[in-house]
Image (tube, rainbow, N blue to C red; front, side):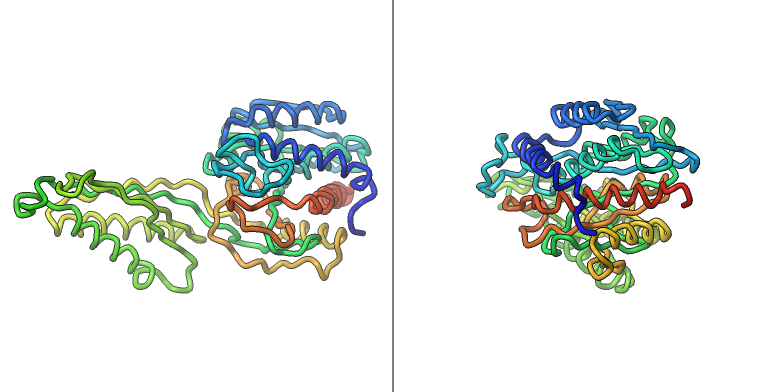
Length: 390
């Protein structure tokens, strides 16, 4: 079927909308302008209900089908926030806000879902109810969790919920996903090593935290190789060190920050426990105090089997079975749509962005050719899941 005719009629306006979002990126929960534009566009499209301020700046639109014999409601979710990155695309619609850019394609995700919402509100060619969810703060702010805690699924109970993300260097018009663990849990490490500072020429009069630092770094890197089953996907990365201020003073304290990514809750628990042991005992062995703040951020994103199949079937109707795969290799990148999937059965599907820079790269840009494919997928998924006989 490929891109639907209604998308072809709307593509110029949708592309302009995407470019406007790209020029005016907003971070985390500060998606005020973006949310206002989305809410206004939903109202202009005749969406039945538009609610703002869910999870601070989230927007939810409710669209009723011509009939509701199914009694079902499905949710479709897009993220809206940008990243604190200085753009390097040289696009005519490049970010006007220095140090902020849409480097993950959320401008495209929002545009695709908005296009589908306008079409669904116009045709009502489904049996049931759709809520379209426009979420802030995916990039480290857990906006999905905030919208849930703000009562989203209490106010609009859903039978199923779906998300979509673009995938660089997969051909445009291709889709991929897989059942089960698909994206990693995201945990943050904050490590402090406390000693006793003093003159660098008299280290014997200090408790130097640097030897403890060296031992802890080495042990953490060895943890993955010797402390976790090599068949269990995981990564522990130390990403920054802070401590000291001049060449001749041993500092009192050194801190490290990093991240842990896992695809299994048992592995997650094991790594946290082992990290606490490594940090405290190695520090103690050097006469220091080792402390770990372990912040569990996003859970593992787990696609539900039936909903994964439903999404794949809808994608195949749009683009052909040869262009849809259901064996996507899991990634340890995080995605807070996992919070929604922990509440409601559903799945996240990925759509090809064509040749492009990687996500979170200053040279990345969402491919406008993808808008039609993603919007068409959303429309097909709604018709399939709310056909009156599903």
